[in-house]
Amino acid sequence: MVFRLPFLTMCRLVGLAVFSLGLSTTAAAQTRILFVGNSFTHGKIDSIRLYNAANVTDENYSQTSGARVESGYTGPWGGLPGLVKKMADQAGLNYEVHIESISGQPLETHYNSALSVINQRIWDKVILQDQSTYPIPSGRTGNRPSFYKYATLLEQTIHTANARAQVYLYETWGRADLTYQSNQPYSGFPIDTMAQDLHNGYFTQYKANGKYAGVAPAGDAWIRAISTGVATRNPYSPESSKLNLWWTDDKYHPSKWGSYLNACVMFYTITGIDPRTLGSAELAAKDLAIRPSAAVALQQVAYDQVAAQQGGPAPLPVQLVTFTARTAGPATVALAWATASEVGSDRFEVERSADGVRFELVGQVAAAGSSTVAHAYAYTDRGAPAGTLYYRLRQIDQDNTAAYSPVRMVATPGAGGLALYPNPAQGGAIRLSGATPGAPVRVLDALGKVALAMTADQAGTAALAGLPSGLYVVRAGSGTVRLSVE
Image (tube, rainbow, N blue to C red):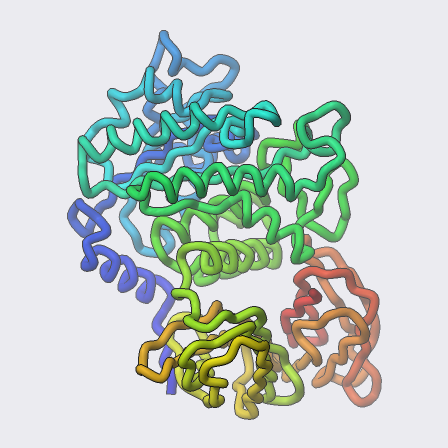
Protein backbone atom coordinates (compact mmCIF):
# COMPACT_ATOMS: atom_id res chain seq x y z
CA MET A 1 0.00 0.00 0.00
CA VAL A 2 1.23 3.49 -0.83
CA PHE A 3 0.64 6.07 1.89
CA ARG A 4 0.35 9.75 0.98
CA LEU A 5 1.82 12.46 3.16
CA PRO A 6 0.05 15.82 3.35
CA PHE A 7 1.40 18.17 0.70
CA LEU A 8 3.22 20.62 2.98
CA THR A 9 4.70 17.82 5.07
CA MET A 10 6.04 16.13 1.94
CA CYS A 11 7.54 19.34 0.62
CA ARG A 12 9.18 20.16 3.93
CA LEU A 13 10.78 16.74 3.91
CA VAL A 14 11.98 17.36 0.35
CA GLY A 15 13.42 20.69 1.40
CA LEU A 16 15.25 19.10 4.32
CA ALA A 17 16.57 16.38 2.03
CA VAL A 18 17.90 18.98 -0.38
CA PHE A 19 19.63 20.75 2.49
CA SER A 20 21.15 17.52 3.78
CA LEU A 21 22.74 16.94 0.37
CA GLY A 22 24.67 20.18 0.69
CA LEU A 23 22.71 22.16 -1.85
CA SER A 24 22.28 25.11 0.50
CA THR A 25 25.03 26.98 2.30
CA THR A 26 22.83 28.55 4.97
CA ALA A 27 21.00 27.07 7.90
CA ALA A 28 18.08 24.86 6.98
CA ALA A 29 15.70 27.62 8.04
CA GLN A 30 16.72 29.99 5.26
CA THR A 31 18.06 30.12 1.70
CA ARG A 32 18.95 33.48 0.13
CA ILE A 33 18.24 33.88 -3.57
CA LEU A 34 19.07 36.76 -5.91
CA PHE A 35 17.41 37.24 -9.31
CA VAL A 36 19.46 39.35 -11.75
CA GLY A 37 17.74 40.45 -14.95
CA ASN A 38 15.49 42.97 -16.65
CA SER A 39 11.80 43.34 -17.51
CA PHE A 40 11.61 39.64 -18.42
CA THR A 41 12.47 39.03 -14.76
CA HIS A 42 10.25 41.66 -13.14
CA GLY A 43 7.44 40.94 -15.61
CA LYS A 44 6.52 44.41 -16.96
CA ILE A 45 2.72 44.23 -16.43
CA ASP A 46 1.47 45.52 -13.08
CA SER A 47 -0.15 42.28 -11.93
CA ILE A 48 3.23 40.53 -12.19
CA ARG A 49 5.71 43.36 -11.60
CA LEU A 50 4.10 44.27 -8.28
CA TYR A 51 3.16 40.73 -7.27
CA ASN A 52 4.13 39.73 -3.71
CA ALA A 53 6.55 42.68 -3.58
CA ALA A 54 6.16 42.96 0.19
CA ASN A 55 7.93 39.62 0.52
CA VAL A 56 10.73 40.31 -1.99
CA THR A 57 13.65 42.69 -1.45
CA ASP A 58 14.07 45.00 -4.44
CA GLU A 59 17.78 45.87 -4.38
CA ASN A 60 17.34 48.80 -6.78
CA TYR A 61 14.32 50.41 -5.15
CA SER A 62 16.29 52.92 -3.07
CA GLN A 63 18.53 54.06 -5.96
CA THR A 64 18.29 57.74 -6.89
CA SER A 65 21.03 58.00 -9.54
CA GLY A 66 23.02 55.81 -11.89
CA ALA A 67 22.24 52.86 -14.15
CA ARG A 68 20.14 51.06 -11.52
CA VAL A 69 17.47 53.79 -11.43
CA GLU A 70 14.27 52.73 -13.19
CA SER A 71 12.29 55.42 -14.97
CA GLY A 72 8.57 55.16 -15.58
CA TYR A 73 7.82 52.50 -12.97
CA THR A 74 7.17 52.60 -9.27
CA GLY A 75 8.62 49.88 -7.08
CA PRO A 76 9.39 47.94 -5.09
CA TRP A 77 8.98 44.96 -7.42
CA GLY A 78 8.02 41.33 -6.95
CA GLY A 79 7.82 39.88 -10.47
CA LEU A 80 9.00 36.36 -11.18
CA PRO A 81 10.82 36.27 -7.81
CA GLY A 82 7.53 37.11 -6.09
CA LEU A 83 5.78 34.20 -7.79
CA VAL A 84 8.60 31.81 -6.88
CA LYS A 85 8.56 33.08 -3.29
CA LYS A 86 4.81 32.38 -3.04
CA MET A 87 5.31 28.84 -4.33
CA ALA A 88 8.26 28.24 -2.00
CA ASP A 89 6.19 29.36 0.99
CA GLN A 90 3.47 26.85 0.09
CA ALA A 91 6.12 24.14 -0.19
CA GLY A 92 7.32 24.87 3.35
CA LEU A 93 10.64 26.38 2.19
CA ASN A 94 12.06 29.41 3.98
CA TYR A 95 13.40 31.38 1.02
CA GLU A 96 14.64 34.96 1.37
CA VAL A 97 14.21 36.34 -2.14
CA HIS A 98 15.87 39.41 -3.70
CA ILE A 99 15.61 41.04 -7.13
CA GLU A 100 18.15 43.24 -8.95
CA SER A 101 16.39 44.05 -12.21
CA ILE A 102 16.90 46.88 -14.73
CA SER A 103 14.50 47.14 -17.68
CA GLY A 104 15.99 46.56 -21.13
CA GLN A 105 19.52 45.99 -19.84
CA PRO A 106 21.93 43.10 -20.50
CA LEU A 107 24.15 41.28 -18.02
CA GLU A 108 26.94 43.67 -19.01
CA THR A 109 25.10 46.51 -17.27
CA HIS A 110 24.68 44.49 -14.09
CA TYR A 111 28.36 43.60 -14.09
CA ASN A 112 29.36 47.24 -14.54
CA SER A 113 26.79 48.79 -12.19
CA ALA A 114 25.54 46.29 -9.61
CA LEU A 115 28.51 44.27 -8.38
CA SER A 116 28.04 45.70 -4.91
CA VAL A 117 24.83 43.65 -4.77
CA ILE A 118 25.89 40.60 -6.75
CA ASN A 119 29.30 39.83 -5.26
CA GLN A 120 28.11 39.37 -1.68
CA ARG A 121 28.90 36.03 -0.04
CA ILE A 122 25.36 35.78 1.39
CA TRP A 123 23.80 34.36 -1.79
CA ASP A 124 22.98 30.66 -1.86
CA LYS A 125 21.44 30.84 -5.33
CA VAL A 126 21.76 33.47 -8.07
CA ILE A 127 19.71 33.47 -11.28
CA LEU A 128 21.08 35.34 -14.32
CA GLN A 129 18.87 36.50 -17.22
CA ASP A 130 20.27 38.45 -20.16
CA GLN A 131 18.53 40.95 -22.43
CA SER A 132 16.01 39.14 -24.64
CA THR A 133 18.01 39.26 -27.90
CA TYR A 134 21.63 39.03 -26.70
CA PRO A 135 21.83 35.18 -26.68
CA ILE A 136 20.68 34.89 -30.33
CA PRO A 137 23.13 34.96 -33.28
CA SER A 138 24.58 38.30 -34.39
CA GLY A 139 23.08 37.72 -37.84
CA ARG A 140 19.67 38.11 -36.22
CA THR A 141 20.65 41.23 -34.24
CA GLY A 142 21.95 39.27 -31.24
CA ASN A 143 25.09 39.82 -29.18
CA ARG A 144 26.25 36.40 -28.05
CA PRO A 145 29.85 37.50 -27.36
CA SER A 146 28.56 39.93 -24.70
CA PHE A 147 26.27 37.28 -23.23
CA TYR A 148 29.04 34.69 -23.02
CA LYS A 149 31.54 37.18 -21.61
CA TYR A 150 29.42 38.74 -18.89
CA ALA A 151 27.59 35.58 -17.85
CA THR A 152 31.03 34.08 -17.26
CA LEU A 153 32.35 37.14 -15.43
CA LEU A 154 29.28 37.24 -13.17
CA GLU A 155 29.55 33.50 -12.45
CA GLN A 156 33.20 33.98 -11.51
CA THR A 157 32.36 36.98 -9.34
CA ILE A 158 29.61 35.11 -7.50
CA HIS A 159 31.79 32.05 -6.90
CA THR A 160 34.70 34.21 -5.74
CA ALA A 161 32.42 35.61 -3.06
CA ASN A 162 30.89 32.21 -2.22
CA ALA A 163 32.36 29.13 -3.87
CA ARG A 164 29.33 27.04 -2.90
CA ALA A 165 26.70 29.35 -4.38
CA GLN A 166 24.50 27.83 -7.08
CA VAL A 167 24.33 29.95 -10.24
CA TYR A 168 21.53 29.35 -12.75
CA LEU A 169 20.81 30.76 -16.20
CA TYR A 170 17.24 31.84 -16.94
CA GLU A 171 16.50 30.93 -20.58
CA THR A 172 13.95 33.30 -22.13
CA TRP A 173 11.39 32.73 -24.90
CA GLY A 174 10.77 33.54 -28.54
CA ARG A 175 9.41 37.03 -29.17
CA ALA A 176 6.24 37.10 -31.23
CA ASP A 177 6.85 40.73 -32.22
CA LEU A 178 10.16 39.72 -33.85
CA THR A 179 8.56 36.73 -35.59
CA TYR A 180 5.06 37.52 -36.81
CA GLN A 181 5.62 41.13 -37.90
CA SER A 182 7.26 42.11 -41.20
CA ASN A 183 10.91 43.17 -41.56
CA GLN A 184 11.94 41.54 -38.29
CA PRO A 185 14.86 39.15 -37.60
CA TYR A 186 12.57 36.10 -37.62
CA SER A 187 9.90 37.19 -40.10
CA GLY A 188 8.67 34.21 -42.11
CA PHE A 189 9.91 31.67 -39.56
CA PRO A 190 7.94 29.81 -36.86
CA ILE A 191 8.32 30.98 -33.27
CA ASP A 192 10.31 27.78 -32.70
CA THR A 193 13.25 29.25 -34.64
CA MET A 194 13.98 32.09 -32.21
CA ALA A 195 13.27 29.74 -29.30
CA GLN A 196 15.86 27.30 -30.64
CA ASP A 197 18.42 30.09 -31.09
CA LEU A 198 17.85 31.13 -27.47
CA HIS A 199 18.15 27.52 -26.34
CA ASN A 200 21.43 27.15 -28.22
CA GLY A 201 22.77 30.38 -26.74
CA TYR A 202 21.95 29.53 -23.14
CA PHE A 203 22.94 25.88 -23.28
CA THR A 204 26.18 26.59 -25.14
CA GLN A 205 27.15 28.90 -22.29
CA TYR A 206 26.01 26.36 -19.70
CA LYS A 207 28.07 23.55 -21.21
CA ALA A 208 31.13 25.64 -22.02
CA ASN A 209 31.39 27.14 -18.55
CA GLY A 210 30.73 23.99 -16.52
CA LYS A 211 30.16 25.82 -13.23
CA TYR A 212 26.47 26.61 -13.45
CA ALA A 213 23.99 24.62 -11.37
CA GLY A 214 21.57 24.51 -14.30
CA VAL A 215 19.38 26.31 -16.81
CA ALA A 216 15.74 27.19 -16.10
CA PRO A 217 14.32 26.28 -19.56
CA ALA A 218 11.40 28.71 -19.67
CA GLY A 219 11.67 29.32 -23.42
CA ASP A 220 11.64 25.60 -24.16
CA ALA A 221 8.61 25.22 -21.89
CA TRP A 222 6.76 27.85 -23.97
CA ILE A 223 7.32 25.75 -27.10
CA ARG A 224 6.16 22.64 -25.23
CA ALA A 225 3.01 24.46 -24.12
CA ILE A 226 2.36 25.47 -27.74
CA SER A 227 3.10 22.06 -29.24
CA THR A 228 0.88 20.25 -26.72
CA GLY A 229 -2.09 22.55 -27.36
CA VAL A 230 -2.05 24.36 -24.02
CA ALA A 231 -0.97 27.72 -25.46
CA THR A 232 -1.58 29.67 -28.65
CA ARG A 233 1.22 29.76 -31.22
CA ASN A 234 0.62 33.25 -32.58
CA PRO A 235 -0.75 35.96 -30.26
CA TYR A 236 -1.61 38.09 -33.30
CA SER A 237 -4.13 35.35 -34.19
CA PRO A 238 -5.25 34.19 -30.72
CA GLU A 239 -7.19 30.99 -30.16
CA SER A 240 -9.96 31.31 -27.60
CA SER A 241 -9.50 27.78 -26.29
CA LYS A 242 -5.77 28.22 -25.58
CA LEU A 243 -3.69 30.31 -23.20
CA ASN A 244 -1.82 33.34 -24.56
CA LEU A 245 1.64 33.32 -22.99
CA TRP A 246 2.51 36.78 -24.37
CA TRP A 247 1.28 40.09 -22.96
CA THR A 248 -1.31 41.34 -25.45
CA ASP A 249 0.03 44.93 -25.47
CA ASP A 250 3.52 44.24 -26.86
CA LYS A 251 3.61 40.50 -27.76
CA TYR A 252 6.98 39.89 -26.12
CA HIS A 253 6.68 40.33 -22.37
CA PRO A 254 4.93 37.45 -20.63
CA SER A 255 1.23 37.53 -19.81
CA LYS A 256 0.08 36.28 -16.43
CA TRP A 257 -0.05 32.77 -17.92
CA GLY A 258 3.44 33.10 -19.39
CA SER A 259 4.75 34.44 -16.08
CA TYR A 260 3.09 31.60 -14.19
CA LEU A 261 4.65 29.01 -16.50
CA ASN A 262 8.05 30.69 -16.05
CA ALA A 263 7.64 30.59 -12.28
CA CYS A 264 6.74 26.90 -12.31
CA VAL A 265 9.83 26.18 -14.42
CA MET A 266 12.03 28.25 -12.11
CA PHE A 267 10.51 26.74 -8.95
CA TYR A 268 11.19 23.19 -10.14
CA THR A 269 14.69 24.05 -11.40
CA ILE A 270 15.99 25.64 -8.20
CA THR A 271 14.10 23.57 -5.60
CA GLY A 272 13.79 20.14 -7.23
CA ILE A 273 10.15 20.00 -6.10
CA ASP A 274 7.64 18.86 -8.71
CA PRO A 275 5.40 21.89 -9.48
CA ARG A 276 2.44 19.55 -9.96
CA THR A 277 2.40 19.05 -6.19
CA LEU A 278 1.20 22.66 -5.90
CA GLY A 279 -2.04 21.56 -7.54
CA SER A 280 -5.20 23.35 -8.55
CA ALA A 281 -5.43 25.32 -5.28
CA GLU A 282 -2.00 26.98 -5.72
CA LEU A 283 -2.19 30.49 -4.29
CA ALA A 284 -0.26 32.54 -6.88
CA ALA A 285 -2.58 31.29 -9.61
CA LYS A 286 -5.57 32.18 -7.45
CA ASP A 287 -4.18 35.67 -6.81
CA LEU A 288 -3.71 36.21 -10.56
CA ALA A 289 -7.20 34.93 -11.42
CA ILE A 290 -5.73 31.97 -13.32
CA ARG A 291 -8.29 29.20 -13.51
CA PRO A 292 -7.35 26.01 -11.62
CA SER A 293 -7.45 23.96 -14.82
CA ALA A 294 -5.01 26.37 -16.49
CA ALA A 295 -2.71 26.36 -13.47
CA VAL A 296 -2.61 22.56 -13.48
CA ALA A 297 -1.92 22.49 -17.23
CA LEU A 298 0.99 24.93 -16.86
CA GLN A 299 2.39 23.03 -13.89
CA GLN A 300 2.36 19.87 -16.03
CA VAL A 301 4.17 21.60 -18.91
CA ALA A 302 6.84 22.94 -16.54
CA TYR A 303 7.35 19.52 -15.00
CA ASP A 304 7.61 17.79 -18.37
CA GLN A 305 10.14 20.30 -19.72
CA VAL A 306 12.47 20.43 -16.73
CA ALA A 307 12.31 16.68 -16.19
CA ALA A 308 13.10 15.99 -19.84
CA GLN A 309 15.85 18.56 -20.13
CA GLN A 310 17.88 18.73 -16.98
CA GLY A 311 16.12 17.89 -13.74
CA GLY A 312 14.68 14.48 -14.41
CA PRO A 313 15.90 10.93 -14.36
CA ALA A 314 19.16 9.99 -16.04
CA PRO A 315 18.86 8.95 -19.69
CA LEU A 316 18.45 5.28 -20.43
CA PRO A 317 21.52 3.25 -21.44
CA VAL A 318 19.40 2.08 -24.37
CA GLN A 319 18.22 4.56 -26.97
CA LEU A 320 14.56 5.04 -26.02
CA VAL A 321 12.62 6.77 -28.79
CA THR A 322 9.01 6.59 -27.52
CA PHE A 323 7.20 5.84 -24.26
CA THR A 324 3.42 6.23 -23.90
CA ALA A 325 0.79 5.39 -21.29
CA ARG A 326 -2.95 5.38 -22.06
CA THR A 327 -6.12 4.21 -20.38
CA ALA A 328 -7.48 1.21 -22.29
CA GLY A 329 -10.50 0.15 -20.24
CA PRO A 330 -11.72 -0.06 -16.63
CA ALA A 331 -8.71 -0.28 -14.29
CA THR A 332 -6.50 -0.80 -17.34
CA VAL A 333 -3.54 1.22 -18.59
CA ALA A 334 -1.67 0.25 -21.75
CA LEU A 335 2.01 1.17 -21.88
CA ALA A 336 4.13 1.05 -25.03
CA TRP A 337 7.71 1.99 -25.75
CA ALA A 338 10.30 1.54 -28.46
CA THR A 339 14.07 1.54 -28.67
CA ALA A 340 16.32 2.36 -31.60
CA SER A 341 19.25 0.35 -30.24
CA GLU A 342 20.31 -1.54 -27.10
CA VAL A 343 23.61 -2.67 -25.63
CA GLY A 344 23.60 -5.31 -22.88
CA SER A 345 20.00 -4.59 -21.91
CA ASP A 346 18.38 -7.20 -19.62
CA ARG A 347 14.82 -6.05 -18.81
CA PHE A 348 12.41 -3.18 -18.34
CA GLU A 349 10.62 -2.83 -15.00
CA VAL A 350 7.34 -0.90 -15.12
CA GLU A 351 6.78 1.28 -12.07
CA ARG A 352 3.60 3.11 -11.02
CA SER A 353 2.98 5.97 -8.61
CA ALA A 354 -0.09 7.71 -7.24
CA ASP A 355 1.75 10.96 -6.46
CA GLY A 356 4.68 11.13 -8.89
CA VAL A 357 7.15 10.71 -6.03
CA ARG A 358 6.90 7.19 -4.60
CA PHE A 359 6.90 4.43 -7.24
CA GLU A 360 6.19 0.71 -6.95
CA LEU A 361 6.93 -2.18 -9.30
CA VAL A 362 3.89 -3.45 -11.22
CA GLY A 363 5.51 -5.65 -13.89
CA GLN A 364 8.50 -6.29 -16.11
CA VAL A 365 9.31 -7.08 -19.74
CA ALA A 366 12.43 -8.84 -21.06
CA ALA A 367 14.70 -6.66 -23.19
CA ALA A 368 16.44 -7.44 -26.48
CA GLY A 369 19.95 -7.65 -25.05
CA SER A 370 22.23 -6.07 -27.65
CA SER A 371 20.72 -4.87 -30.89
CA THR A 372 21.21 -2.16 -33.49
CA VAL A 373 17.65 -2.41 -34.86
CA ALA A 374 14.41 -0.99 -33.50
CA HIS A 375 12.36 -2.94 -30.95
CA ALA A 376 8.81 -2.30 -29.74
CA TYR A 377 7.57 -3.26 -26.29
CA ALA A 378 4.20 -3.24 -24.52
CA TYR A 379 2.82 -3.88 -21.05
CA THR A 380 -0.77 -3.71 -19.78
CA ASP A 381 -1.41 -2.75 -16.18
CA ARG A 382 -4.75 -4.41 -15.42
CA GLY A 383 -4.89 -3.42 -11.77
CA ALA A 384 -4.66 0.35 -12.08
CA PRO A 385 -6.45 2.20 -9.25
CA ALA A 386 -8.69 5.19 -9.84
CA GLY A 387 -7.21 8.66 -10.08
CA THR A 388 -4.17 10.32 -11.63
CA LEU A 389 -1.32 7.85 -12.05
CA TYR A 390 2.31 8.20 -13.04
CA TYR A 391 4.38 5.56 -14.85
CA ARG A 392 8.07 5.19 -15.57
CA LEU A 393 10.43 2.51 -16.87
CA ARG A 394 13.41 1.22 -14.94
CA GLN A 395 15.78 -0.20 -17.53
CA ILE A 396 18.26 -2.72 -16.10
CA ASP A 397 21.40 -3.81 -17.91
CA GLN A 398 22.94 -7.28 -17.79
CA ASP A 399 25.49 -5.97 -15.27
CA ASN A 400 22.61 -4.80 -13.02
CA THR A 401 23.14 -1.09 -13.62
CA ALA A 402 19.85 0.77 -13.99
CA ALA A 403 18.41 4.04 -15.27
CA TYR A 404 14.96 5.59 -15.49
CA SER A 405 12.81 6.86 -18.33
CA PRO A 406 10.80 10.08 -18.28
CA VAL A 407 7.52 9.88 -16.35
CA ARG A 408 4.16 9.57 -18.12
CA MET A 409 0.82 10.55 -16.54
CA VAL A 410 -2.64 9.10 -17.14
CA ALA A 411 -6.05 9.68 -15.56
CA THR A 412 -8.00 6.52 -14.74
CA PRO A 413 -11.69 6.48 -13.70
CA GLY A 414 -11.99 9.08 -10.95
CA ALA A 415 -14.68 10.70 -8.86
CA GLY A 416 -18.08 9.44 -9.86
CA GLY A 417 -16.54 6.45 -11.67
CA LEU A 418 -15.91 8.39 -14.90
CA ALA A 419 -13.53 6.92 -17.47
CA LEU A 420 -12.21 8.06 -20.85
CA TYR A 421 -10.82 5.72 -23.47
CA PRO A 422 -8.30 6.29 -24.92
CA ASN A 423 -6.62 8.87 -22.70
CA PRO A 424 -4.36 10.47 -23.82
CA ALA A 425 -6.08 10.46 -27.22
CA GLN A 426 -4.70 11.14 -30.66
CA GLY A 427 -7.75 12.46 -32.49
CA GLY A 428 -10.86 10.54 -33.38
CA ALA A 429 -13.71 9.66 -31.04
CA ILE A 430 -13.10 9.42 -27.29
CA ARG A 431 -15.50 7.31 -25.23
CA LEU A 432 -16.76 8.55 -21.89
CA SER A 433 -18.29 5.94 -19.58
CA GLY A 434 -19.47 5.77 -15.99
CA ALA A 435 -21.70 8.84 -16.09
CA THR A 436 -25.20 8.97 -14.67
CA PRO A 437 -27.66 8.28 -17.51
CA GLY A 438 -29.00 11.58 -18.83
CA ALA A 439 -26.41 13.63 -16.90
CA PRO A 440 -25.05 16.79 -18.58
CA VAL A 441 -21.51 16.38 -19.87
CA ARG A 442 -19.19 19.37 -20.17
CA VAL A 443 -15.66 19.42 -21.59
CA LEU A 444 -13.64 22.43 -20.36
CA ASP A 445 -10.45 23.65 -22.06
CA ALA A 446 -7.34 25.06 -20.35
CA LEU A 447 -9.08 28.44 -19.97
CA GLY A 448 -12.06 26.83 -18.28
CA LYS A 449 -14.30 27.47 -21.27
CA VAL A 450 -16.82 24.88 -22.48
CA ALA A 451 -15.36 23.14 -25.54
CA LEU A 452 -18.11 20.50 -25.82
CA ALA A 453 -21.53 20.05 -24.21
CA MET A 454 -23.84 17.05 -24.44
CA THR A 455 -25.90 14.61 -22.41
CA ALA A 456 -24.89 11.10 -21.38
CA ASP A 457 -27.03 8.38 -22.96
CA GLN A 458 -29.05 5.79 -21.04
CA ALA A 459 -25.95 3.63 -20.67
CA GLY A 460 -24.06 6.50 -19.03
CA THR A 461 -21.75 6.94 -22.03
CA ALA A 462 -20.96 9.74 -24.48
CA ALA A 463 -18.74 10.16 -27.52
CA LEU A 464 -16.37 13.13 -27.51
CA ALA A 465 -15.08 14.11 -30.93
CA GLY A 466 -13.55 17.05 -32.74
CA LEU A 467 -11.39 18.28 -29.87
CA PRO A 468 -8.14 20.00 -30.90
CA SER A 469 -4.92 19.07 -29.15
CA GLY A 470 -4.75 20.28 -25.57
CA LEU A 471 -5.57 19.47 -21.95
CA TYR A 472 -9.21 19.30 -20.82
CA VAL A 473 -11.37 18.60 -17.79
CA VAL A 474 -14.47 16.47 -18.44
CA ARG A 475 -17.36 16.86 -16.01
CA ALA A 476 -20.45 14.67 -15.86
CA GLY A 477 -22.74 15.04 -12.89
CA SER A 478 -20.53 15.02 -9.77
CA GLY A 479 -17.65 13.27 -11.53
CA THR A 480 -14.60 14.81 -13.17
CA VAL A 481 -11.70 13.36 -15.13
CA ARG A 482 -8.78 14.94 -17.00
CA LEU A 483 -8.28 14.40 -20.72
CA SER A 484 -5.23 14.95 -22.92
CA VAL A 485 -5.63 15.18 -26.70
CA GLU A 486 -2.33 14.99 -28.56
